[in-house]
Amino acid sequence: MDALSAARAIVPKDGDKLPSLSWRSWLVLALFIVVSVFVIRPLHIPIPLPTHIWPTRWKTVRIHMDMKLAPWTAILVLLASTAIKFRQEVVRGFVGSDGIEPYAIVILIFALAYICISLDQSGLLSYIAMHVTKRWGRNGRQLLLCFYTLSTVMAVLTSNDVVVLCLTPIICIFSDTTGVDAEPFLVAMFVSANTASMALYIGNPTNIIAAQANGISFLLYSAWMALPFLGAVVAGAVVLHFVCLRVIPRDISVDMSIQPRDMLVKPRQAVFGASLLAMCLIALSVSSFYGVAVWIVTLPFGLVMLAIDAAIDIYQTRPVAALDGSEKKSVVSEAPGVADTEHRNTHLLLHTETQLTIYVAPSTRSEHIDTRKKPKSLAKCKKVFEKIHKVGVRRLPTVTAVVQRLPYNIVP
Image 1: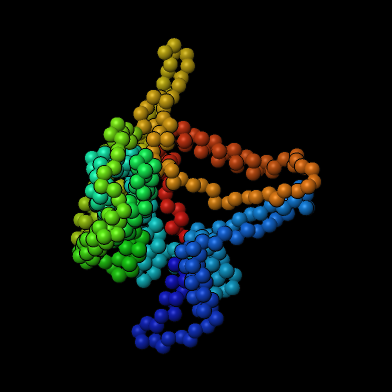
Image 2: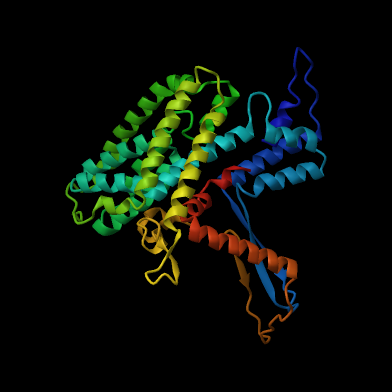
């Protein structure tokens, strides 16, 4: 966004003559292209560093130059080279200019993402998917079209990321249990998720940026994109019919003992989340007539969903007196949908956390154990954060799980 602001700073206004390009302009453009390449195809850079224990013992730190690190690195390089200035391009890159407001886009995406991820955490999306599998799972070709339709509906109402994160584990589990090739089902899901998400303003960040930059309202965007959306969905179904249906067996053996209701681990959050999402979409449609910014509409709904999740978590994990009255225990072990529900949620199959991997090269010398104590300030801060995380997991399991899954990668 800073490169975009820097580029717009040289656009002439009111008939002014376009200024000549300087080395700063070319540097901004070059770094913008490099960052785009790293975002599309991340680069993992191994850097060997000597350990402080023994000079001949090395450790390799892998730096992941991806969408999280590459933009910040480019900004620092541009600032160090004086190609951009902090008070101009950097500040405008966050606050926005010429109709684009990056902070508003982030607020909008995170508010809707919290509602959708909370729905997924409640098990509602898995419940719907498993119900479809059980209802139409015996006919492989019919099931493929059902998954395509389900992905389309979910992509319209939520976003393409939510569809992929929710349905991918379910399709993989379905493939493992039935022996059916998962590739046609995954292709159908990816096609529908990335074409159906063009229907509404909130389908993906690209829609939001394009609409905001051109001053297009929620309803006007949907009116313009209705026909392209329908055409893309129909064309995708036709292509799938000729490409994928021929490799899918007509008859599939499905375990009918699977109960979709078992996937609905948090019914209260599911009801509140579905109601809030429906009201949010209605409010976004109505806001188009009054010129209210979409992030102002979505933020309250996201905060309400956060408050509901926190209230239910606190109530279900409250300490209660034991039978003898002398001890207290938490009802988290008895509350359905709160106690150890991670193993029942299929979306956790995709969960990955490690972004920094350290490898220590073997050495022929004897092991040297560092007996030096870490600085007290660092150790104290680490203990504080660990304590906060433990309290959050114990008393706010849903909120903690949803917050950890928010799309932080898109912020840079």
